[in-house]
Length: 165
Image (tube, rainbow, N blue to C red; front, top):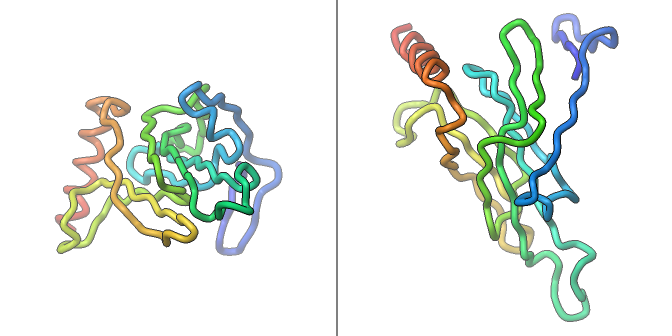
């Protein structure tokens, strides 16, 4: 990762770092595409990632279309970004959810959801590209055990401050 400024645009080569994580056995079938999308929760700093498996090259294309799956994916947290810019990459993914039958290509955290959207915030959304089956955006329920009570309270307080302004 690198520090970036937009005005004026610059990517600072003298800053940043790198990290490594290991996939658990439950995610080994996703090792061909272990990270296809990332987003950072603007309140908690959690880094969300998605991994997906595409059977391209694995099936007999004379009989079947590889654009029909079977697909499977996982959405998980991979690290945290602190307010001071410090990045921590976990040794392994946390808060893992599996999406069998879907090829997830993107993840997005939403902390400030417009009225009328009929969902609670914060929320995690995934976007799929299931080739011949089309694509969709759907809300995803992530395991709540990944957050300490302090993090959950801080996220709620930040939402309440935004609503008052």
